[in-house]
Image (tube, rainbow, N blue to C red):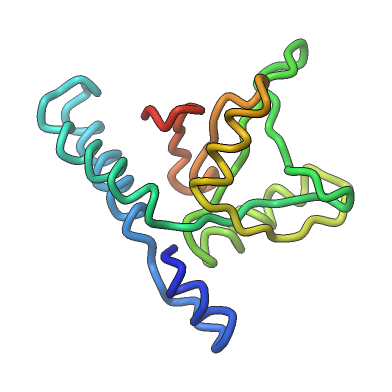
Length: 147
């Protein structure tokens, strides 16, 4: 979601805005299904659009009552984790209700910028990346923004 859309949401409770990144991810996913090969040259333009759009948006994630991020652990034996993030208010509402079923804590929304994500990646060796819109698109990016 763009910062302007978020301001509109805060001021007017407008939830209709749709993330450009969400659109690009959906195009990418549809192309992957058709091409069956993520290295196809046709996907390069979409990958570039995703990377170009990523720094221009803000995201929503969940924090618990200790003000810590909700983390999805990669395995039971590892401390490595990913953070679920959502591209817009509708995705957040869908995803947060499903994730809340997995956790007993009271969960709140937190706004994250790409700069926030970069800071986490620099400071926490166990952070492996994030999953965008985990309950609809389930699109993964690594700690350095790789797709």
